Image (cartoon, rainbow, N blue to C red; front, side, top):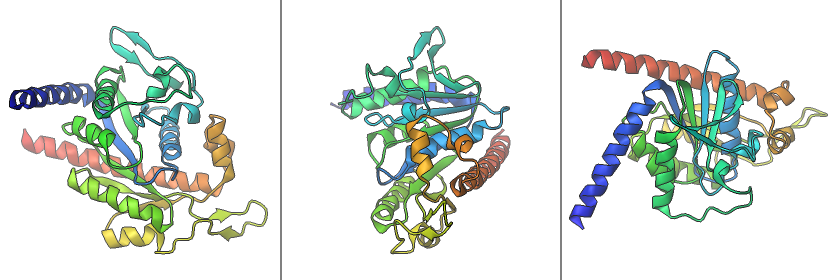
Length: 295
């Protein structure tokens, strides 16, 4: 058993080193996490990618490691696309010239196929995505994760442990039942030494498109994300109000930035994305200084 464990550790170390080499040409790596399912994490991941790709000088990649519930292909309007393999590895699917996507959804025979895998197989799939996809030179790699703190989260953090992850963006909704699980997610980040970029409160109020009156659909009974972030000394990146057009755009595989540019939700997203870009720019500068100090 000891020999098997030693071999396992050696293979894991080899994979981490291979991925480290592959990730050298990926400038920024951002994980999108949530403690609770159904809080709009994949919607946020997709539109973070869309927002960053608005700058045509930047190359953006979106990696979907929600192995059992891969919704990114549907949200991005590329459901049914196939992954092609070449001498340099798997080719991701391109949404725009500077925005590509990889998901297990592209490897299934149909959108209703269930993925019934244990941890080791999920682990192997994530390793392949990081090591064998021909990402090319990327400015931003956004990783959409499943809810919780399980196999996929441990795998992605382990494999990117030597690749300088910028940090995690954690998505929640205002009610305590969601915040309860988000606190666990924050605890997970601290335990695995994953930096937290900040928290986004999704579905934060609803502005009536007719009368412009704001209502709290999910009341923040314990103070919402704002109070939690104050208590835990974590940045609140912003609050995104509910807008039915967001769900409609996702179902149609379209960016709501272009569909509803004047929506309060679009404005909130733009401000949040700007704050994430500023964080990543600062992180990159600190990383360069650290590397220079080690030389």
